[in-house]
Length: 351
Length: 144
Image (cartoon, rainbow over all chains, first blue to last red; front, top):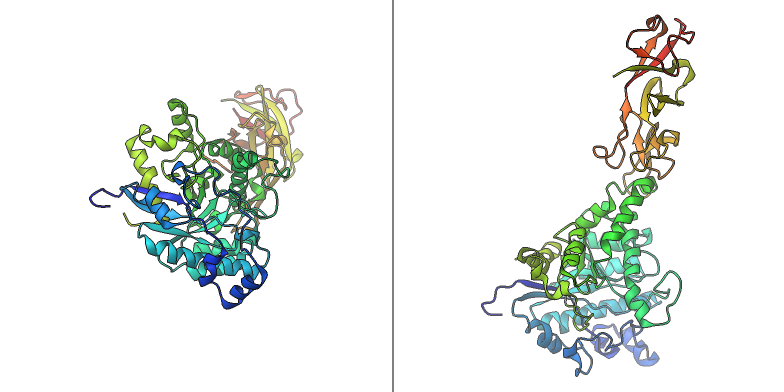
C-alpha cells in the first residue's frame, strides 16, 4: 500500500465456497453429523457456473475466487490505490427449504468469511449472508453478526420468492435498519420461482440480460411498500444490476405515482426522490452506450452524483463498459465520487 | 377583470358543483360547506375535464397500512389520470407550488345589488339584464 493515497473502494468482489466441507469447522455437531450421514451438499443451486463471464486473469485458477490469494493477486495487490474491497458471498442459501439448515449454513458462511477472508487481509470488508427466505431467522443472523468487525452490509439475492417490499420481509429490513447496515441486492438468486414474470427462459443469456427486470420489480416494490419511510436511515445498494435502465423506470414510476399515490399514501414524495436519497448502484455492469455524449446524457439523467459506486465484480467480467473503464472522462471530481467518496458515505467508512 | 354572474346560491347545495362557460372558459363552481370556489375545468396535466372528476378526501398516512382521511369532499381528482387538486386553492397534492389549476374568487352577491345591473357586470349564464333577477335571491359572481 505504501505511499499511494487510498482512493478506490471496490464495492463488489466475490468469494466462492469450494464445497460444504469448508464449512464443517463452523457448523454445529448436529449439522456435521447430518452432512456426514446424508450427503447434504449445502446450497449448490448457483446461477453462475464457476467460469461463466469470468475475468481473464482467473482462467487457470482451480476454482476462480475460491482463495484469498487469487483475490489479492487480481484485485487487492493489483490496485495499490485500493482502500477497501467488499466481499459479497452470493451463495444460494435461499434454495434451502429447511429453515434450520438455511440458518445454520448462513451462520457458518459468515464465520467462514470472517476467519478465512477478513482475517487474512485487512483491506477486505464483507456482507452478511442471511437466510432471506425466512425473514425472522435472517433478522436473528443480522443481530448476531452486526457487531462483528468487517461486516458492513446485509446481502440479499435480487431474485426472491416474493418482492422485498412485501410486509413479510419487514423484520429483515428492520434488523438492517436497527444496526445501521445498508442492504445490498445482488444479481441472481434461486428461490424456486422463475427469473421472469412469464416463466422460465430457455437460455442463460435470457436470464443474464433480463435480470435488470428483476431489479426494477424489487425497486418498485421497496418504494411502494414504504420501506424508505418506515426506515429513514435505510440505504439500498443494487449490485451488478446495470445502471442505464434506472432513469426511464423512474420517469414511469414518478408519472404513475401522481395519479395512484392515494393507494400508497405513506409514499409522500416522488419515487425518484426516495431513490436518489436511499439507493445506490454499482458500476459493473453499466449498460450504457460507448458514445461519449450519449453516456454523459445517461449519467445526467441519474440526477445525482452520489448514486454510483465503483465495483469490479471480480472474478466476473461483463465486457468493457466505457463508463467503468474511463470514469475520468466524465469529470475528475465525478470519478472521485464514484471511486471512493460515495461508498464511504453509504458504508460510513472513515476516510 | 370583469364580473360574471354564474348562478344562484340555491342551485348548488353543499357538496354540489355546477359547470359554467364564462368568457370562453369552462369553469367548475363548487360548494364546500357553504363556501364557494371556482376552478378552471382543465387539468394542467393534459387538459382533461378536471371539474367533472370525483370529489374525495385527502388521504395521508403515518406509515404502511395506515390510512388517514381528512377534508372530505375537498379534493378533486382528474377523471383522466387521477391527479389530485385542492378545491380551495387549485394546488395539486404532489407539487403544490409547481402544478396548480387556475382558481377564481367567487363572490356571493344579493340580488338587490344586481338590479339594475351594475356597469361592470356583463352578460353571463345569468344575464342580469334579461333574467328575472330576484331581490330575494343570492347570486354567485366570478371575476375574470
